[in-house]
Amino acid sequence: MTSAIPLNVGITRSAGANAAGGKRVLLAEPRGYCAGVDRAVETVEKALEKHGAPIYVRKEIVHNRHVVETLREQGVIFVDETDEVPEGALVVFSAHGVAPTVHETAAERNLRTIDATCPLVTKVHQEAKRFARDDFDILLIGHEGHEEVEGTAGEAPEHVQLVDGPDSVDKVTVRDPSKVIWLSQTTLSVDETMETVERLRERFPTLQDPPSDDICYATSNRQTAVKAMAPECDLVIVVGSRNSSNSVRLVEVALGAGANAAYLVDYAREVDPAWLEGVRTIGVTSGASVPEILVTGVLDLLAQHGFGEVQPVTTANETLVFSLPRELRPSRLSAP
Image (cartoon, rainbow, N blue to C red; front, top):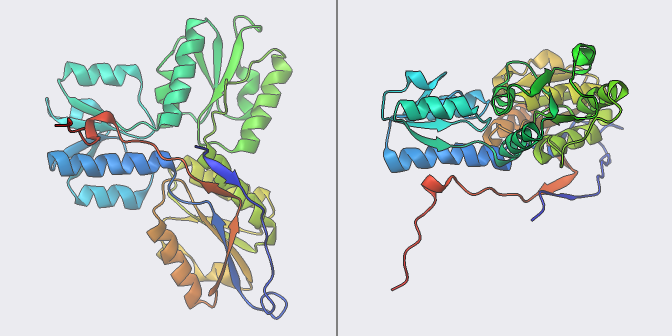
């Protein structure tokens, strides 16, 4: 099963739209939930069904205010660390992954655990362990303090060095320039990551690439869709939370690809009517942890301001689905 099927992009101007001063919305596809987020949110929902409230989740299960607040109302208690969880209770680890030390601490407190780490993040963890075993210096491109970076670095702390963007490259030191590999956080800007890699390669010509792309398919697909529509847009509205790395990147990508303005909002009510003045074409997309209901709210608001025509801009069809953690999969009944 492939994660994305490339499609032709056709952005057409309707007969009366821009030429006659009409208004339109270009709606990016794909957008919203990726397979990893869908799996993580469903993991918490199924855990609630199976075990009842309260259950505990370390950090935010995904970086979206609406999702977190909705789950909290259903009896989920979000904590920063496992030592806040009562001994013996159930705790779910978020989609961003955790370091081995977190698993160890949970075991010491006899916590029951369900790991909702995105499988694509787990893949990066496995790469870090593999190259640490081979005694490589691992240059992890990512944002300092992000939970995913902390989890990946925790797999091999003595081998991993964080590179937080192109400007951090000059600070990198390695033991053996012939044994260096780069890995990355899965939710970064593709373009900025490659700029960082090129600067690293100028310093370390034999720098090795990851065995496969670390930036996840969903992050890349959403950025591609925004790039396709941004040159046509007076304004791009990205639905997503400010602590969502991939959502913040979409704003940056939109501006870099030619949109006159771009803003990040959690809810339709955060859209400032002043943004719409003099605007004819608005692009709308959403980050990988955003439920579609929030996008619908923005589209409804825009329709009230005369932006009733919605034209999809489709660059890929996503088909990837991840199975739930084994603790929550339906048990197989033995044949009679």
